[in-house]
Image 1 (cartoon, rainbow, N blue to C red):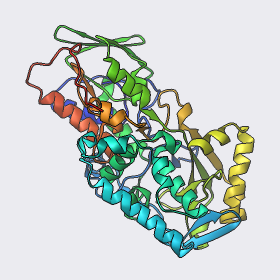
Image 2 (spheres, rainbow, N blue to C red):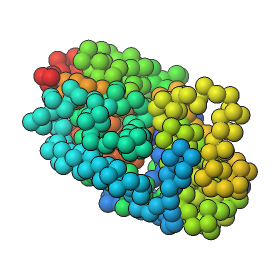
Image 3 (tube, rainbow, N blue to C red):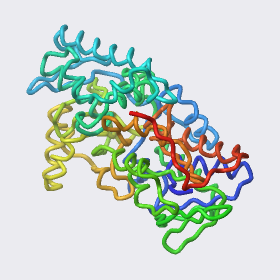
Length: 457
């Protein structure tokens, strides 16, 4: 097993419970991958990466239950805030109460995306009747024709979509967006706290689930062991990392696509698969968790949810522990905004963020106990968050290779998931799928050097 994120750990756990001997090699000094829970000095958990579970995502909730980990609802009571230049809009629900024509145009744009996404086959989005036309467009070009005319409406909707991919939307295929919406049910699900992708947090932090899976592996887990090569030999695989060599019948590679290119494969990956991994690049996202003595905004009738397109806190969400005590605001910046802020001195970046939070939540926001910042694209064993996105032409040309085995090499990771693509639940589902492929594979395995199928663009 290559990678101890949720996909790799789930695959390993499933195989081990079926009586297989398993070794997991992880490059980092921790488990969890793009989920990273850090404990503060007083024991307060801080989720630096993935944290939320959407309702109805049964594999994640089932796994948490099996491991004795409980969840709780994200605080969402009170008014949300939208910053429009110097004006603050207070509202409830999903769409701010800005001008009625703007609200209507945003709602219609969402409806158009949702209805179009229903025409995308979940298991094979590249096979949709209009897949070629959708994959030739970018999300940015679609937005230009979305019918949203006002500046605030355009900025708000663009930021919402940019938050999904954490990159310039001119780099994202429209088919990629439609597939993501299909995988989660609707844009409302993706954008929402209540009833949506940010509805549930995990007691003790999301990393608790990863650590409990890892504990069951014992000596079968090796940290600080980046895999350097995967060699297929007669009857099996040899996986080598620094100082460790493992012989196995099969291997699951459960890392972000770009990191697969850091591994030497023998036989070599096909040129088409290499192009896929070169182009499937994750976005630039910074998550900063700001810790306070208490969640003071709640007493003032605020939910902690706020949006300020282009600001040092483009989106904030209440990420406080369930047991009371400390308050936590999770603040996000995406793509070009995250890059711009990363160029600042850390003290300047902190000051800019706190000024923004004071403007929204008042003077109490000025003095946090702690501020934990993670620029995910600078993490060498992650290279971006929350998932890889696909530029125009990639899915229709190479999409089937995301899950298609390469000899005895199987692929997992949230990018390979269908349902819950890009989320924690998707990573878990991908690990279950990879394990099932190994357990159920009684047919002869084609050699890794065999030609891979190509899907015409």
